Every structure is written in C-alpha cells, then in structure tokens.
Amino acid sequence: MNTGHPGPADTADAVPRSRVLPREEWGAVLGFAGVWLVFLLMAVASVTVARIQAGDAAGAAVAVGSGVLFTAVYLVSFIVPDPVPSWPRPANTGLYTLALVLVTALFATTAGSAAINVVPYFAAVWVFSQRRRTALTAVAVIAAIGVVLALTITDGEPQIWLTGSILVATAVIVAVRLASDSEDAMTAVRHELDLSRQREELARDVHDVLGHSLTAVHVKAQLVTRLIDVDPARAKAEAEQIVTLTRSAIGEVRSTVDGLSAPQLATELAGARRVLSDAGIRAEVPGIEAVAQVPAQAAELFAWTLREAVTNAVRHSGAARVRITLAADRLTVVDDGVGPDGPVPVSGPGEASEPSSSRRRGTGLAGLRARARAAGGTLEVRPEHLGTERPGTRVEVTL
Figure 1 (cartoon, rainbow, N blue to C red):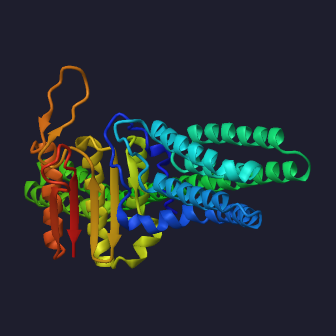
Figure 2: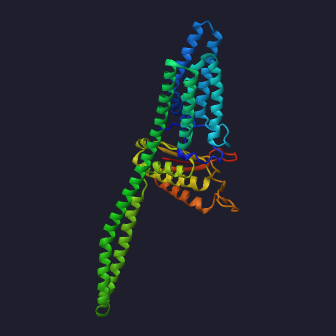
Figure 3: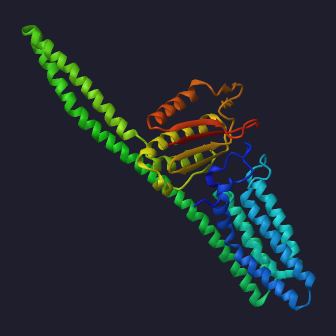
C-alpha cells in the first residue's frame, strides 16, 4: 500500500525534491489519509449543532470554517509533502504542524476542550511522512501533549473519553505504519530468498553441466598423453575431440547462466525498492501484484529495463526521487535528477563531474535498446522536464 510516506528512503534532504505527489497517486493517498477525517467530521458536527442550539450562529460558522480549513491543510500535507523543497522533510512537516495548530486554536474558540479530538491528525501527518525513528518520536511527543491537555482542561467522563480516544487513535495510526513497514521488510526477505534460490539453481546446473564435460575432457587428455608417441594420428583426433567437447561445454555453461540470470520482474520491483531506499532515494514503486497484468513476453524486457534504469538513477542521476509505473504494455522509470544530458555526479572533494554521455551510462542503455528491438518494442530515454535546472530522466519501454 502506497500511503505517501517515504519510509527509510527519504534521506536525501539536502537535494531538491519534487514538491507535489504525482497526480495519478492522489486518489490512493487522499483516500488513505482522508478516511480518518470521519472522526473530525463528527467533532465539528457536534460543536456546530451545539452552537446552533445555543443561538450562536457565529460560533457555528467558526466551527464549520475551521473544520474545513483543518481538513484542507491536513490533506495538502500529503499531496505536497515538501512545500519548501530545499528544507529537510521534518522542517516541512513542522510547517504544516504549525498551520494545523493555528487552525486548531481557532476551532478551540468555539469548541473548547472538544478541539483536543484533532490530536491524532497531528500524529498521522508525522507518522506517514517521516522515517520510522523520527515518526515514532514525534508521535510519542504529540500523544503526550494531547493526554496532558485532556487531563488539564477536562475532568470526569470527558477526561476519560478524550484521553482514551487520543491513545487508541494514535495507536491505530502507528500500527498501520508499522504494518506498512513490515510489508516492505517481507518483500525484501522474499527478494533475498529468490536470489538464494537462483544461486542454488545456478550452482546445481553448472555442476551438472561441467561435471560430465570436464570428466570427458580429463579422460581424453590422459589418452592423448599416452598416444602422442605411439599413435600420433589417433592422438591428434582425440585432441580435436577435446576442442569440440570444450566448445560444447562453454556453450552449455553460457546457456545455463543466461537462463538463470534473466531477471524476474517481481524480483526486480522488490530489488528496486530496496536499492533506492539504501541509496537514500524516495521510491514510488508499484506493488508486486502489478506484475500480474504484464504478459510473459513483456516481463523479461521490463525487468531488464527496470534494473538498468534504477542502476543509472542511483549511480549517475543525483536524484532524490524515482517513480516507477507499470502497465501491461509499458514500463516507465522517472527520476528528478540531472537529466540524461547532465553531468554525472562524482563524490569526493575536487573531483569534476563527468558528462552523462560517458561510456559508463551509455553502454547499458545501448544494450537495452537492442533488447527492446529484439522483443519488438521501443525504448525512449529523454528529459522529464526539458529546460529546467534539474530536468530529470524518463526511461520508457513500450511493447
């Protein structure tokens, strides 16, 4: 499930990031974030009804207006997680938190202690936008502040109700985040198991291929040694057979290795998420279930393309974010880095950047084009936002 949070991948705060979530992700993210708003609606409705019954039309208007404004700021925090891209993610989230605090203060002028009901929303904003350690620390502080306010401002049954609702709602939000992280971890474990299985198959098949061939070569070499003096003609024939056996064994080994090393699309998706996360790049990767819609003849080409595009993004783009989209006939990998014609970032003081046309980047893409042509498809590599300082790169393969 893509909740819009970066998880461990969001570590490249020093590099400018894309401000706005891609439009195609808005529905899922807003649906996930918005489901919690039912509780805010209940609180606003209760206060509004109470103000109307008391003849306080202005108070009712303030309750409705602040509720709408709170909802807007809350949802925008998910759609535009980095309103100031040059700031680190916690600073951007802090900016939204300040805005929500001001709106809550306005709501409190008419709602009183009922305004404390919005505390879990502050927790949600932090839980789904930060790395786990930062998120859990922020949630603990927010929950503690909410409980202290509930115990200080209220008493009796309202105090128990508010304290319990804050703790329960916050616990549910944290549980959802931990479940999401657990799903990512399980995906990584499955990826490791797939790799281990491939290694075992490779070792077994190479052993089976080479065991027979090398034994035959060894026996014939011994025979040549014995015949070279007594029967040179036969020794020559046996030596020629050794050449034939060796050529055949090389072909069998190549065929075996090629068959086992052909990447699996599901494995490459899981691997891309992990590699990008390890590199500190925010990854937007479709779930493994998306592979089911891809025909078998397209899956291998898409897997090769994904592997190369992610490698280039990590090694050459200087990107802070990579978005991968997958359809039955198309794979697209987009980053927000220096672009295909930009300099290749080189770490280390005093080192100059290399042009992106260097052989390091071009060789893999040339191979991908050949694969795409062989499969009857096309590969396109171009800037995502032409004419900007960081145009990014779009790698798209279509069948």
